[in-house]
Length: 515
Image 1: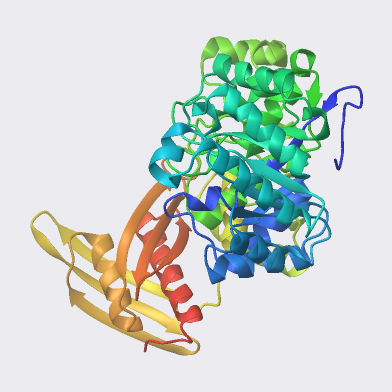
Image 2: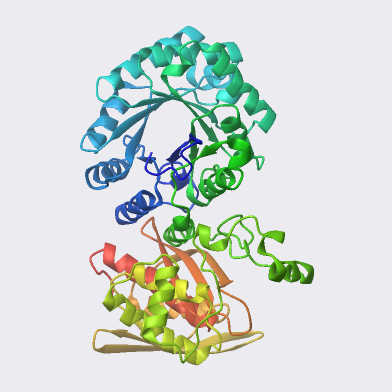
């Protein structure tokens, strides 16, 4: 493990599957550059194993795993494979240049899966698992096996399969709660049973992979750790299929905060939790709820008078963690229109952002513009400006100005001017169902890129009447989905910027098609 702050505690391997299971969340797909950015962030976070994808699933998945394996150093890079020869061969082809590689093979074991999906007997399942683990072992030494739907598998058969997989060469055996069926007591019983009844379990790390269908993924994972699991599979912000997976930030901080109980620790650099959460949220377009544990905007907010009084007298009366330990800055409200460049750069650094001189200059200019429109600047405002810059695309078109006249029962009249290099294009039209729809239609008219808006989300970055609005949109062009993001104290302007950001992404990836 990279770093263990409590050497007397049992080390827990953190296996992050944001790029594989997390990306399977509807709307959360990432392109290659975005996956590379997340992978680098996971290394900085101190993640032990990064499951980079499912190489045989698609050419894009293969390319992503291959490029991450070639270029990312500091964590084990893992590729997923079904218990099929072609899957394993493809996984190794993608992983072969990794600094440290792991092949993760899986085959379902529950009677529901055996009877209805696999059409296999118990003996056939074991035979297949053994053959495929051995095949993977011929490629590399680090092999993980997962009996899919383990928590609905007969205990005797689960132990039998795990024993056979370890004998065949598996160095990690994982217990997936594939459909989020388990409870903490049930999970503890399964882990205890495996540890007591599998004679060669000491030759492998026992892992856990929990889904959150019943809201118990973190609790189930903690129960597994408490009874001997040595690896937890999780994702940033709890992303994943259906209700998601065990949340990395929650499992890590639970183990850190209650190390007295669990007697276990991870190697995660916890001050990187909030920046990494924000990165994944911005890349996927999936917003973190304000009251989300650890990384939510309200996680360390105290509004009730009795809480505020207690906090002023002694922080630990109502806080079991310090906000700076997870990457929030110690104080939130700091800057205004008279603040200088150095103060802004220092605050960005304290928030976990590493900016170059040119980036600081751009940020300072944007900050000054915002300060003219907004009396008080919060950390979340600064983060919004930074992330807008970090995730900017090559801007073929920029918003120069807009005006919309609308009212109840009236078709909006919009005048829009876009800038493209030194040229300006203006359109005036009556269209749409409200001001935002009118803006979208006008942008499509000027750029000549037809898209369909699939999702539109607006939320307040901070608080107050002058708070910035952050708009996230998803648009579809020729069957491909593109995301856009815009921030402004004017929510209509933020919407225009978000839509234009998505249009620019379309243009960048389609060789500048359009007018």
